[in-house]
Length: 257
Image (cartoon, rainbow, N blue to C red; front, side):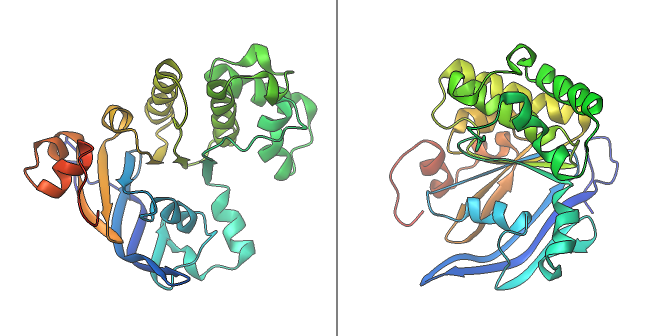
Protein backbone atom coordinates (compact mmCIF):
# COMPACT_ATOMS: atom_id res chain seq x y z
CA UNK A 1 0.00 0.00 0.00
CA UNK A 2 1.28 3.46 -0.94
CA UNK A 3 1.38 6.41 1.43
CA UNK A 4 0.29 10.01 0.97
CA UNK A 5 2.45 13.08 1.61
CA UNK A 6 1.71 12.85 5.34
CA UNK A 7 2.82 9.23 5.51
CA UNK A 8 -0.73 7.91 5.83
CA UNK A 9 -1.65 4.77 3.89
CA UNK A 10 -3.59 5.49 0.69
CA UNK A 11 -6.72 3.51 -0.05
CA UNK A 12 -7.04 2.05 -3.55
CA UNK A 13 -10.45 3.02 -4.95
CA UNK A 14 -10.10 1.41 -8.40
CA UNK A 15 -7.63 -1.30 -9.34
CA UNK A 16 -6.95 -2.69 -12.81
CA UNK A 17 -5.02 -5.96 -12.78
CA UNK A 18 -3.50 -7.36 -15.97
CA UNK A 19 -6.41 -6.22 -18.13
CA UNK A 20 -6.39 -7.71 -21.61
CA UNK A 21 -8.94 -6.68 -24.24
CA UNK A 22 -9.15 -7.42 -27.93
CA UNK A 23 -11.69 -5.69 -30.18
CA UNK A 24 -11.95 -7.52 -33.46
CA UNK A 25 -8.41 -7.97 -34.70
CA UNK A 26 -7.04 -5.12 -32.55
CA UNK A 27 -5.42 -6.04 -29.24
CA UNK A 28 -6.26 -2.77 -27.46
CA UNK A 29 -5.22 -3.51 -23.88
CA UNK A 30 -2.21 -5.72 -23.25
CA UNK A 31 -1.94 -6.22 -19.52
CA UNK A 32 -2.96 -2.87 -18.03
CA UNK A 33 -2.03 -2.57 -14.34
CA UNK A 34 -3.12 0.60 -12.55
CA UNK A 35 -4.07 1.59 -9.00
CA UNK A 36 -6.22 4.69 -8.58
CA UNK A 37 -6.29 6.01 -5.04
CA UNK A 38 -9.36 7.27 -3.22
CA UNK A 39 -9.77 11.03 -3.62
CA UNK A 40 -7.11 11.49 -6.30
CA UNK A 41 -7.41 12.72 -9.87
CA UNK A 42 -5.83 10.26 -12.28
CA UNK A 43 -5.40 11.49 -15.84
CA UNK A 44 -5.03 9.02 -18.71
CA UNK A 45 -3.06 10.18 -21.74
CA UNK A 46 -1.82 8.43 -24.86
CA UNK A 47 -2.26 8.25 -28.60
CA UNK A 48 -5.75 8.22 -30.12
CA UNK A 49 -7.13 4.69 -30.23
CA UNK A 50 -4.73 3.62 -27.50
CA UNK A 51 -7.37 2.28 -25.12
CA UNK A 52 -8.05 5.18 -22.77
CA UNK A 53 -11.81 5.25 -23.28
CA UNK A 54 -11.84 1.45 -23.30
CA UNK A 55 -10.44 1.58 -19.76
CA UNK A 56 -13.31 3.86 -18.69
CA UNK A 57 -15.80 1.37 -20.14
CA UNK A 58 -14.18 -1.41 -18.12
CA UNK A 59 -14.50 0.63 -14.92
CA UNK A 60 -18.25 1.08 -15.50
CA UNK A 61 -18.72 -2.54 -16.56
CA UNK A 62 -19.82 -1.58 -20.08
CA UNK A 63 -16.96 -3.80 -21.25
CA UNK A 64 -15.57 -6.92 -19.61
CA UNK A 65 -11.90 -7.84 -19.86
CA UNK A 66 -10.85 -10.88 -21.86
CA UNK A 67 -8.67 -11.60 -18.85
CA UNK A 68 -7.63 -9.76 -15.71
CA UNK A 69 -9.65 -8.07 -12.98
CA UNK A 70 -11.37 -4.71 -12.45
CA UNK A 71 -11.71 -4.09 -8.72
CA UNK A 72 -13.79 -1.25 -7.29
CA UNK A 73 -13.46 -1.08 -3.55
CA UNK A 74 -12.89 -4.74 -2.80
CA UNK A 75 -15.18 -6.17 -5.47
CA UNK A 76 -14.14 -7.66 -8.81
CA UNK A 77 -16.82 -6.16 -11.04
CA UNK A 78 -15.77 -8.20 -14.07
CA UNK A 79 -17.57 -11.14 -12.45
CA UNK A 80 -20.83 -9.33 -11.69
CA UNK A 81 -24.14 -9.72 -13.50
CA UNK A 82 -26.14 -6.68 -14.61
CA UNK A 83 -27.95 -6.45 -11.27
CA UNK A 84 -24.65 -6.37 -9.44
CA UNK A 85 -23.22 -3.84 -11.89
CA UNK A 86 -26.21 -1.56 -11.33
CA UNK A 87 -25.20 -1.25 -7.68
CA UNK A 88 -21.61 -0.41 -8.63
CA UNK A 89 -22.74 2.14 -11.21
CA UNK A 90 -24.55 4.07 -8.50
CA UNK A 91 -21.13 4.79 -7.04
CA UNK A 92 -19.61 5.95 -10.35
CA UNK A 93 -20.68 9.07 -12.26
CA UNK A 94 -19.74 9.54 -15.91
CA UNK A 95 -19.19 12.70 -17.94
CA UNK A 96 -19.34 11.66 -21.58
CA UNK A 97 -17.28 13.36 -24.26
CA UNK A 98 -20.23 15.21 -25.85
CA UNK A 99 -22.14 15.68 -22.59
CA UNK A 100 -24.85 13.25 -23.78
CA UNK A 101 -27.72 15.43 -22.58
CA UNK A 102 -31.27 14.53 -23.58
CA UNK A 103 -32.36 17.18 -26.09
CA UNK A 104 -36.03 16.66 -25.26
CA UNK A 105 -35.51 17.40 -21.56
CA UNK A 106 -34.82 20.71 -19.84
CA UNK A 107 -31.58 21.31 -17.97
CA UNK A 108 -33.30 20.52 -14.67
CA UNK A 109 -34.87 17.34 -16.03
CA UNK A 110 -31.51 16.18 -17.35
CA UNK A 111 -29.81 16.71 -14.01
CA UNK A 112 -32.66 15.00 -12.15
CA UNK A 113 -32.56 11.93 -14.40
CA UNK A 114 -30.16 9.78 -12.30
CA UNK A 115 -32.24 10.35 -9.17
CA UNK A 116 -35.48 9.49 -10.97
CA UNK A 117 -33.86 6.33 -12.30
CA UNK A 118 -33.15 5.33 -8.71
CA UNK A 119 -36.76 5.80 -7.71
CA UNK A 120 -36.79 9.32 -6.25
CA UNK A 121 -40.29 10.76 -6.79
CA UNK A 122 -40.54 13.54 -4.21
CA UNK A 123 -40.70 16.76 -6.23
CA UNK A 124 -39.40 18.91 -3.38
CA UNK A 125 -36.40 16.66 -2.87
CA UNK A 126 -35.67 16.54 -6.60
CA UNK A 127 -35.93 20.31 -6.96
CA UNK A 128 -33.64 20.95 -3.99
CA UNK A 129 -30.97 18.50 -5.18
CA UNK A 130 -31.10 19.67 -8.80
CA UNK A 131 -30.86 23.32 -7.76
CA UNK A 132 -27.88 22.57 -5.51
CA UNK A 133 -26.09 20.59 -8.23
CA UNK A 134 -26.60 23.38 -10.76
CA UNK A 135 -25.48 25.96 -8.21
CA UNK A 136 -22.20 24.11 -7.82
CA UNK A 137 -21.52 24.44 -11.56
CA UNK A 138 -22.83 28.02 -11.70
CA UNK A 139 -25.94 27.32 -13.79
CA UNK A 140 -28.87 27.37 -11.38
CA UNK A 141 -30.54 30.21 -13.31
CA UNK A 142 -30.64 28.01 -16.44
CA UNK A 143 -32.66 25.19 -14.85
CA UNK A 144 -35.62 25.58 -17.23
CA UNK A 145 -33.66 26.05 -20.46
CA UNK A 146 -33.31 23.37 -23.12
CA UNK A 147 -29.82 22.02 -23.94
CA UNK A 148 -29.84 23.54 -27.44
CA UNK A 149 -30.00 26.99 -25.85
CA UNK A 150 -26.66 26.46 -24.09
CA UNK A 151 -23.07 26.84 -25.22
CA UNK A 152 -20.77 23.83 -25.42
CA UNK A 153 -19.09 24.70 -22.14
CA UNK A 154 -22.42 25.14 -20.39
CA UNK A 155 -23.64 21.77 -21.65
CA UNK A 156 -20.52 20.15 -20.21
CA UNK A 157 -21.20 21.81 -16.86
CA UNK A 158 -24.80 20.57 -16.88
CA UNK A 159 -23.49 17.09 -17.65
CA UNK A 160 -21.11 17.39 -14.70
CA UNK A 161 -24.00 18.42 -12.43
CA UNK A 162 -25.87 15.32 -13.58
CA UNK A 163 -22.83 13.11 -13.01
CA UNK A 164 -22.35 14.27 -9.42
CA UNK A 165 -25.93 14.84 -8.22
CA UNK A 166 -26.12 11.42 -6.53
CA UNK A 167 -22.79 12.08 -4.75
CA UNK A 168 -20.83 9.25 -6.41
CA UNK A 169 -17.54 8.00 -4.99
CA UNK A 170 -15.89 8.38 -8.40
CA UNK A 171 -16.48 10.37 -11.59
CA UNK A 172 -15.10 9.33 -14.98
CA UNK A 173 -14.47 12.07 -17.54
CA UNK A 174 -14.06 11.29 -21.25
CA UNK A 175 -12.39 14.28 -22.93
CA UNK A 176 -14.18 16.84 -20.70
CA UNK A 177 -12.59 19.87 -22.39
CA UNK A 178 -12.67 18.68 -26.01
CA UNK A 179 -13.85 21.41 -28.37
CA UNK A 180 -14.06 24.07 -25.67
CA UNK A 181 -12.50 27.53 -25.70
CA UNK A 182 -9.79 28.32 -23.12
CA UNK A 183 -12.20 30.04 -20.71
CA UNK A 184 -14.64 27.11 -20.74
CA UNK A 185 -11.75 24.68 -20.40
CA UNK A 186 -10.51 26.53 -17.35
CA UNK A 187 -14.01 26.42 -15.87
CA UNK A 188 -14.27 22.64 -16.30
CA UNK A 189 -10.77 22.13 -14.86
CA UNK A 190 -11.71 24.23 -11.82
CA UNK A 191 -14.88 22.21 -11.29
CA UNK A 192 -12.99 18.91 -11.41
CA UNK A 193 -10.58 20.23 -8.77
CA UNK A 194 -13.50 21.55 -6.70
CA UNK A 195 -15.30 18.18 -6.76
CA UNK A 196 -12.15 16.52 -5.46
CA UNK A 197 -11.47 19.15 -2.78
CA UNK A 198 -15.02 19.58 -1.47
CA UNK A 199 -16.31 16.02 -1.72
CA UNK A 200 -13.23 13.80 -1.90
CA UNK A 201 -14.38 12.42 -5.25
CA UNK A 202 -12.00 10.11 -7.08
CA UNK A 203 -11.64 11.29 -10.68
CA UNK A 204 -10.39 9.45 -13.75
CA UNK A 205 -9.93 11.81 -16.69
CA UNK A 206 -9.17 10.93 -20.30
CA UNK A 207 -7.75 13.91 -22.16
CA UNK A 208 -5.45 15.00 -24.98
CA UNK A 209 -5.14 18.48 -23.47
CA UNK A 210 -1.75 18.45 -21.79
CA UNK A 211 -2.24 21.86 -20.17
CA UNK A 212 -5.46 20.63 -18.58
CA UNK A 213 -3.77 17.36 -17.56
CA UNK A 214 -1.01 19.21 -15.73
CA UNK A 215 -3.55 21.48 -14.02
CA UNK A 216 -5.87 18.84 -12.59
CA UNK A 217 -3.81 15.67 -12.20
CA UNK A 218 -2.40 14.24 -9.02
CA UNK A 219 -0.91 11.54 -11.23
CA UNK A 220 -0.77 10.90 -14.96
CA UNK A 221 -0.78 7.47 -16.59
CA UNK A 222 0.65 7.33 -20.11
CA UNK A 223 -0.70 4.42 -22.16
CA UNK A 224 1.49 3.03 -24.91
CA UNK A 225 1.04 -0.15 -26.94
CA UNK A 226 -1.79 -1.32 -24.72
CA UNK A 227 -0.14 -0.98 -21.32
CA UNK A 228 0.83 1.68 -18.80
CA UNK A 229 4.22 2.95 -19.94
CA UNK A 230 4.54 5.64 -17.24
CA UNK A 231 2.60 6.63 -14.14
CA UNK A 232 3.62 9.53 -11.92
CA UNK A 233 3.02 13.14 -11.00
CA UNK A 234 2.96 15.89 -13.64
CA UNK A 235 6.30 17.07 -12.26
CA UNK A 236 7.81 13.60 -12.64
CA UNK A 237 6.47 13.37 -16.17
CA UNK A 238 7.92 16.74 -17.19
CA UNK A 239 11.28 15.89 -15.59
CA UNK A 240 11.57 12.56 -17.40
CA UNK A 241 14.40 12.21 -19.90
CA UNK A 242 12.67 9.28 -21.61
CA UNK A 243 12.47 10.28 -25.31
CA UNK A 244 9.13 8.49 -25.78
CA UNK A 245 7.51 10.51 -22.98
CA UNK A 246 9.24 13.71 -24.06
CA UNK A 247 8.10 13.37 -27.68
CA UNK A 248 4.49 12.66 -26.73
CA UNK A 249 3.95 15.43 -24.19
CA UNK A 250 5.63 17.97 -26.48
CA UNK A 251 3.64 16.91 -29.54
CA UNK A 252 6.59 15.61 -31.52
CA UNK A 253 5.91 12.78 -33.98
CA UNK A 254 7.23 9.43 -32.89
CA UNK A 255 6.88 5.89 -34.12
CA UNK A 256 4.39 3.47 -32.59
CA UNK A 257 3.22 5.57 -29.67
